Length: 387
Image 1 (cartoon, rainbow, N blue to C red):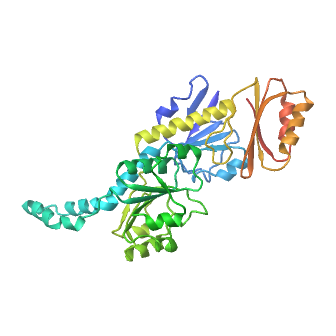
Image 2 (cartoon, rainbow, N blue to C red; image 1 turned 135 degrees about the horizontal axis):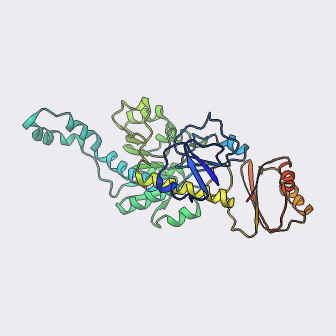
Image 3 (cartoon, rainbow, N blue to C red; image 1 turned 90 degrees about the horizontal axis):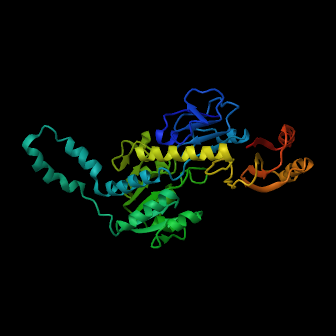
C-alpha cells in the first residue's frame, strides 16, 4: 500500500486516479511514500525519511527545497503544460486590455455612479480618453516558446497578428506544435526592436532575472506593450518605470503585482490568475498523480526538476532504481555488484542532469538485501529502491 500526503486541497479528478486498493491519501498521514502539493511552503518543513517523491500540481516549484530533496534522492515533479491553456487565455485577454484601455474605462464608468441621467452624456463625452489600437496587423514578439508560448503564438496568428518568436532552446515537441508562419527572431534584441507587443514566457533564473532592463527598453519601439505571465523578477521595475515615463512602454500587464508598481496608471496588475481555472487545477492534479504513480510503481521519471527524464518499459521480474551523484565510474562500480551474484541485466538506462544521475536496471534474477546494501555503500549513491 502506497501512502500519499496531500499538503493542499487537490482536485478529486486527480485523486480519483489513485487505485483504492493500493493507495491511501490524506492530509495527515504517517510515513508517506510521496507528497502532493500546490502552494504549501515546504522550504522549512521537516520532510519524512519515508518520502520518495514530491509532485507539485503546477509548474512553479519555488515552494519546494529542490536541492535538499535531490541530495536525499527525493524526486520532485512538476506539471509543465497542464495549465498552459488557462495562462494562454489570460495572455490573449492581456493583449486586448493593454490596447483598448478597458481596465481604466470600466473604473472610470463606475466612478460616475450617482450622476443619474447625466451618465450617458458623460460616457459619450469622455470615451475618446480611452481610445486604443486594434491588435490585428500588429507585431507580437514572444520570448520563450514552451507550451504556453506556442499556444499564444498560434492563437495570436489566428487573430491576425504578425508573430515572431525567440527561443534558442526550443524543444522538438514545441517546434512541431508551432505554426509554420511564426517567424524566428535571429536574436532577442531584434525581436524587442521590432515588436509592438512583447509577451514573456521564460522561467526565472540567474540568467533571466531582470532580463527586461534599461538596456533592453532602450531598443524597443515607442509605445510598446509588455505582457508578463511568466514570473515576477523578469522585468526590472525601476527601469520599467523610467521606460513608462519616457513613453517607451505604453502599458505593462503583469500577473505578478509588486507594491512599487501599483500606483502607475500604465501598469495593469492581475493577482496571479494565470492558472486559476477549475480546468487547470484538474489537469495539474491529474498529471501530478500520473507522474507519481509511474515513479512509485515503475521507477520512471517524467517532468522532474531535479533528476533526468528516465523512462524504460519493464523487461524483467525485478527493477532496481538508483540515484547517484553525477561523478565518474558510477556504472563501473554498480554493475560488478550484480555480476558478483550472477545477476543478469536484461535492460539498463542511465541518464544524468546537472549534479545528479539516475539508473533503471531490469533483471530476472533473484537477489537479497545484501545486493541493495552493497550498492547503497558505493560512494556517491544516494538512493536505491527495488520494484
